[in-house]
Length: 308
Image (cartoon, rainbow, N blue to C red; front, side, top):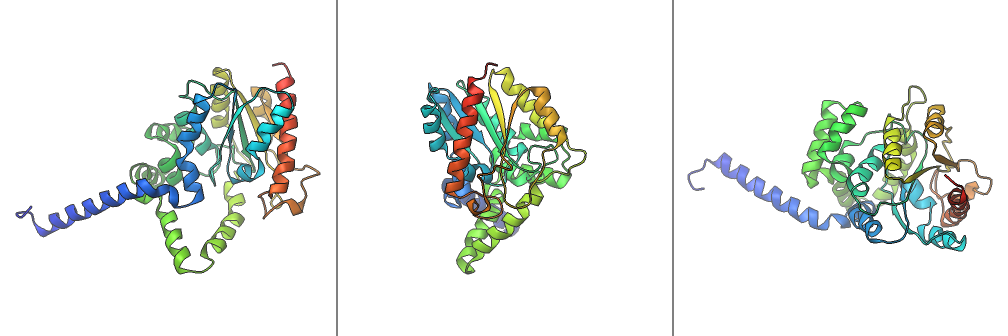
């Protein structure tokens, strides 16, 4: 070390600091936010399904589904319907779309010995389309593997900057959590920072999540349906209600549902889900969630009682 030039010594010191920060961050990342804490527990949730000797029900989605469906109420409701007791797990990270959900399935669910019997996916707008937004940092850092990157680039368009972002996030937690760290610091320094930021994100999320109404495709969804069916498992799609920025169901999506012979539960315009049951433009209150979950119980009971 003594004979090294100053620049080399500085680079080594910087590398040591970065490695120490990376190690520390990996040990405490679950404290950065509630969403990150939920992402960190995904392997545990998958393991719960694997260890159970009961029929499994996996609920995939984002914050719409997280706020809209109460897993405990769903469990008790299905039991009251006289259906077999199930192990129900929710994997519903914020801001996710089909690309995140299929990476979760490939990396956490398909490998299980005891795969869930039913996968329920809650969505809105164009979140199931191949053209739904790609978030390279989240995909690379949280949900996908390097192998998934090859698959995604075969199904969707990613430029060199997005690919670089994906690879960097897959490698460095400091990069993956840069926004969470920034928000943590600014929330301490600036009063009401997080409240204002969350409101802006809520207003933008619906538009950013939506795919263009024209030229939409559903190759990734189709591959997912085929994969689950090859395991003898069911997939159910659930169109979530929103208060503002209403959406229609893409005819191409409806064709995919029909051709693949799966169930789509259309909850966009339920009479009993009124405007006062939303906390904002799209997320349900606990009272709204209770009503929607009760409806889901009835619909799942009908599905399970219908011969395949």
